[in-house]
Structures are given as C-alpha cells and as structure tokens.
Amino acid sequence: MRFIALALLAGGIGGVLTLQRQTTRALTAEIERSHGREEELVRLRAENERLQQELVSPAELDRLRDDRAALPRLRAELEQLKRSQAGRISK
Image 1: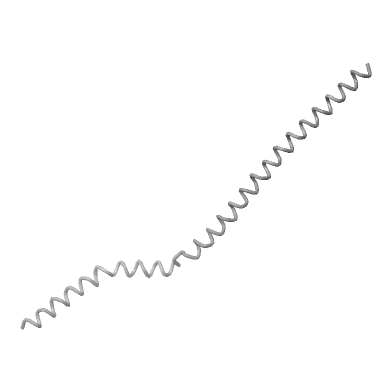
Image 2: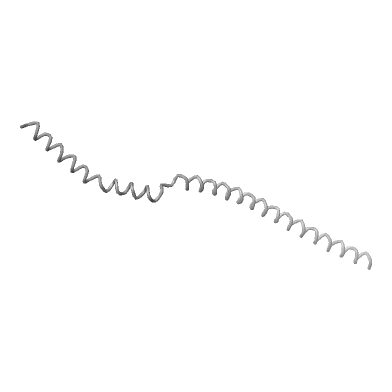
C-alpha cells in the first residue's frame, strides 16, 4: 500500500515537474520573441525619426506648390519676351 502511495506521489510530482518544465520553455520562448519585437520596435522608431527629419515642412511644401503653379505663366511670359526681342532685332 505504501509502495502504491509513493508511486502515485512520485508520478504526481513527476507530472507537475514536467508541466513546470514545459511552461518554463514556453515562457522562455515568449521572452525571446518579445526581445526580438522590442529590437524591431527600436529599429523602427529610429527609422521613423530619421524619416521625420527628412520631411519637407508644410511652409516649404506650400512654397514649392506655388512655384510649380507659377511655371506656366512664367514660361508664357518668357516666350512673349523672346518674340518681342526677336521683333525688335528684325526691325
């Protein structure tokens, strides 16, 4: 009877230890994945900061849009001046 009780106790302890070992392995793997995600997050934050510094300011963007919008008018003025100049030279 004692032998059966000891065997059951040993089996129960063995089962608990096996479960604890599996849980420890799973938690260790999760910690490793977490560290990998943390490293990726640090890398992405650094890249995001670098890209933010490269962004054109809203004021500069507005100025560039205004300059681009003025190009057709300036080209037309240039062509008109060229024709005017050519007319003066031919007279």
